[in-house]
Image (tube, rainbow, N blue to C red; front, side):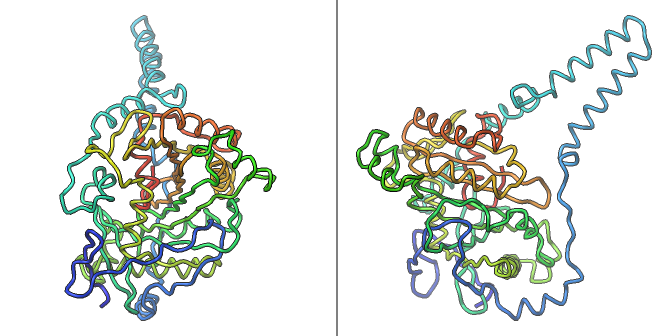
Amino acid sequence: MPGSATTYQRGRARTTGSPLEWGPLGECGRMDSHLVDHRGEEAGMARSDGARGGERHSRPRRSLLTAHWGTVLTIELAVAAAVVAFLIGGTTGYIVAGAVAVVTALLFVPIRGRSLIERIRLRLAYARRRPDDVDADVPGDLVPLAQWVPGLSVAQTHTGHGEEVGVITDGTAWTAVLSLTADDQLLADRGADLDLERLAHLTVQDDVVFAGVQIVTYLVPAPTSLLLGEDSAALGAYREILRQQPPPSVQRSFLCLRLDPRLCMEAVARRGATDDGIQATLRFGLHRVQSVLKRQGVETRALSPIEIHEVLSLTAGAGPEHEQQRTREAWSEWHCDGLVHRGRAVRNWGRNASIGYGALLESIAGSPVLFALASYTFSPTSQPSGGVRLVTTEAAEADRAVAHVESHLNNRLRFAPAGGQQVPMMLATVPLGRGV
C-alpha cells in the first residue's frame, strides 16, 4: 500500500509476506543515453498536489560570497582594524597595522590551493574521523559503508501502483535512487545530451525541496591495463583493432534524490509528520523529477531495495574476502577490503559543467584502474560540488592513475589539493545524494 515502509536486512524484507526477490540492476551504459520508461509515483497524488503550484518554493542557491560569509567578515574586520591602527599613526599603530596584515595574510591567503585556516580545519576533521562500530544485523557487504555512515539502512516504500521503491536512510535524510539505463551504443560520454545545469532546477519540485540532487557514474575500463599490463599482447591487439580509445566495459549512472525534512517541513506536514509522511513526500518529489526528466528525453526507473543494496555495495567497493578491519582512512587514500581508493575533489569544472563531467569520464575510461566513480551534486544551499574516486590494488598504481587522469584532462578541470578528504570523497561518490 502507498506509504508502507519495510527495513531491508540481509537480502530479505522483514514482512509477513514472501521475501524480496533479486531483480536485475539494469543494462550498463552512459549518461547521454535514452532510457527505459518508469511511471514513478501515483497520478492521483500528482494531480492533487499540482493545484499547489502557486506555493512553489523559490530558494536561490547561495553564492560563493554568502557561502563563506564568516571568512569574508573576519577578513573585513581584520582589514578595518589594520586601517584604524595605521590611521592612529605612531610606532605602535604602524606595528599593530603591519602585524594584523601579516597574520591575516598567513591565515587566509591560499598557498598551494589551501589557506592556513583551511589546513587546520582539514587536519582537525581528519584527526576526529573514526569508523564506527556496526551492528551485527547489518549485511556484510554494507559494513564498509555503514562504518562511516552511522544509522545507514535500506527500507522500501510502494507507489500507488504497488511498485517497490528503495529508500536509503542515514538518520538525517531519506534518499531515493533512479537508474539511468543505457542504449546500445556503449561509448564514452561527452556530456552532450545530459545538461547538468538544467538538473540544478530539480532541487525544488513544487513544495518539495531536496537537500541534494546527485549524479553518480560507476565505470570499469575495458580492457583494464591494470590487470593485463601495458605490455600485454591481448591489450595491444584490442587497441590495434579499435584504433581508438576503447569504450568502458561497464558504465552506469544513477540520479540520487536526498530529502532532508527540515528543508520542507510544510510539505512533510501536509502528508503526515511521520516516517510515512516523509516517504510520501519523497515519492511525490521522485515522481515529479521523473516527469521533468522525461520531458527532457531522459527516462529513468526507481531502484528497488535489493538493487539499492547491491549498488551501495558495488560503489563502496566491498569485497567478498576481507580481514577483520574492513576499512581504514589514510591521508592520501581510503582502504576497503584490500583495495586502495584515491579520491580527488574537482574545484573547477570549466566553462560548461556537462562537458567537464564528460571529459572526466573519458579520462577515467583509459586510466589504469579496476573501477572508478565520478559524481556531481547540486544543493539548494551551496554551490555544486563533485569529484572522482579511482580504485586500484596498490598506492603506486593509484599515483599512476591520478597522473593519467590529470594528463588526459590537460587543465580542462581543476582539482582541489590532494589529501585529508578521503572519507568525504568516498561518501560523495556513493549514491547517497551528498556533496563534497
